[in-house]
Amino acid sequence: MATTIDSFTRADDTDLGTTWDAGYTGFGVVHLNTNAARASAANGTDCVESSTAITPANDQFAQITLTTMTGTLDLSSAGVILRAADPATVTWYWVYAETGTAGGSAIAKESGGSFSILTSEGAVTWAAGDVLVGAVRGSVVMAFRNGTALLTTTDSGIASGRVGLSIKVQSGGSVANVIVDTFKAGDLSTTTIRPLADGTTTGWTRVAASGTFAAKIVDDPDANDGDTSYVMAPNLTDSSMWVTLDATPSDFELGVAADLKASAKKVEAGVVTGADLTNLFLQLERTDESTDITAESTVCNVTVTASYTLFTRTVAVSGTHTKTNWDAARLKLRQDYTLTGMVDTTAQIRVTAAEVIVAYVPIVSEAVGRTSKNTHPWPLGINLGMGIGMPA
Image 1 (cartoon, rainbow, N blue to C red):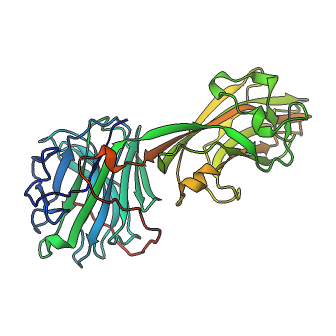
Image 2 (cartoon, rainbow, N blue to C red):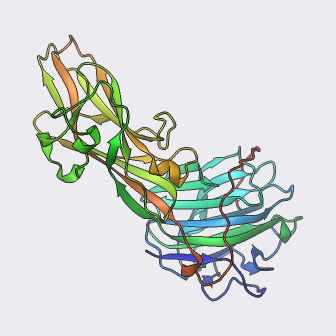
Image 3 (spheres, helix red, strand yellow):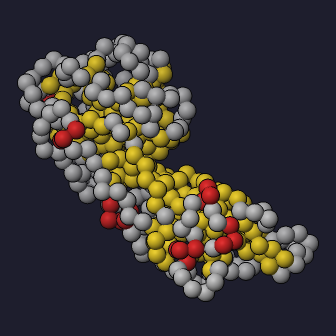
């Protein structure tokens, strides 16, 4: 796994150094000043450099700490770039924060010098000490502020590339208005977590009366044991159950997305004027079984009765969740029952296996970096403002 950290603890310079590349057509160079990164001038030009310290995987992240984010000028900004082309080609995904009343946050795309905003918001006012994280996994690009999921969008136009950072100060401002410290970046990590213990299981049954519900579905959904062990939703009704999952690895810092997997089949009998529908939905929640960690999955249409069907649903993270929250996460299995025609004798779902694959930002320690300086944990507070703009 490739990761890098740069705390910018070195002499002032008109470039970030030997493991950074500038030279993007139409863009400025980032300067080093007082052990931090700044724009080269307050002239409205985006200053962009990409890191050559690592060759990151296609699924990657980049993170910056905002030492200073001040000034009344609209649309000064700081951000990270993902899957960036080598200079001088202007192609990358862009996750950035902006100042002023027209500020906010955005995910944008540069494609051969053609700029477009993919998604944005105008409610967040960025401040000193805030930590911005951009991540891309497959075709999903995400933005986080202080560990809170902020924006997500889908685009498949850029497959791979470097990581880097950007800073811009509008004309009339000062390069001291936007200062960046502690750049971290690298490969997104993944971990597989499976059922460990029971949560609420009211109304559901398990094959044989002994043992936990979690133990019945702990096997690999891709190579499950079929009807040897399973849990089953109640007949002819909506119902949910929860299981507590394994803990995340010790290097887990920020969960950015999850693949929810389950192998399920339909049990039906006595069909009258059309089979009743049994659909399965999956979701991660905290231990209270009410606070969402992820969005609920799209529907899993469970229609096959002769064998188990593997369902995989990728879901976005919502809200702010610490490692402790993730380590106590519960997987929710929800059966949605719909009557079709007249009531059938039997219509219910069996689940024989379930697991969750979590994509996360790993802890990046100074031991893997090329400089030495304390890093900054993200704060918990969120300030609200208005507006959104874009880099020039």
